[in-house]
Length: 336
Image 1 (tube, rainbow, N blue to C red):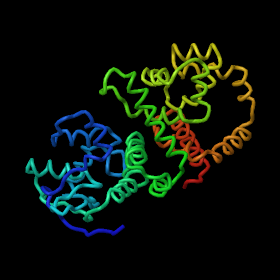
Image 2 (tube, helix red, strand yellow):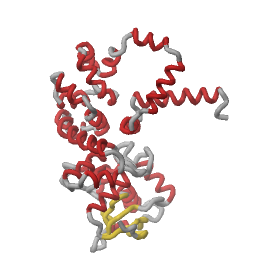
Image 3 (cartoon, one colour):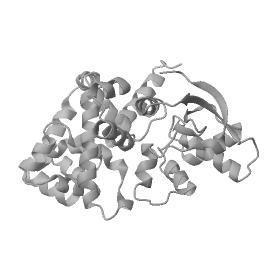
Image 4 (cartoon, helix red, strand yellow):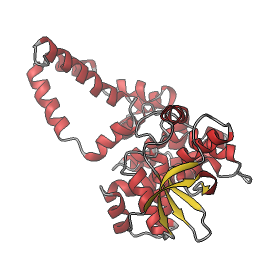
């Protein structure tokens, strides 16, 4: 792939990329697409960013205003007509356009861009994948899965091509695609309208792909629509408790508690007071050695779940543990 040419291009000649999954998930079903629709699509959600962190659309806009421009060039494909289509950088283009329309102080007529010419769709996809699936400006997991689904089912990329583009693990990519299919087929069916479709619930459907989960649901006489209903009604909360479903559903008391009061309450029934007493009797050294062994043996996909669910109970427990260890290090004078 050619590296392209760095230019300052006219903002009025730039066309936003409507094939970007971040935009498509918002604009599907809209017959007429206005510039305001595009801005809303780019700006929704606190994790929907191009800044490499969890800043919002508005925060990124303020940063660009303060600095008088962008620090990283957008990437565009130049057509024979002279029109530039954004491959990577839709949010930044939208912000420049808004500043220009509102006559904000500064030069918003041109935007720094890495210009490539007549790129085939395969190379456009490669750029999107590198920038947003494995790069610093990540899409949310649902959008990643939607894009992977389109690459496999609509653009007919082979698994070797997808894995080469994304890196990582074929099994995880397969799980993402299957999770997207399940969420679209079952979750969309049980929500009252598209406005209630919560893409933040996607990780529950990723967990659904884990070994034994689907089998346990069907064996207990339930369906995947039932699972989607549990997700929608927040019976499964935190979302990583999906992996406890085989335990919940095989025990009648746990099952009824789960169906009536949710996973948090059902989980309490899995551990008897006697087991807790036994843990209290174990030395802290043995507990730490066991914990270290389990942490060191964490799989990559388990770490991904923690990263994708920063507010989950398990993630918070890791952070609490880190804080306590940091305090001990300070008391021992090891951080001085």
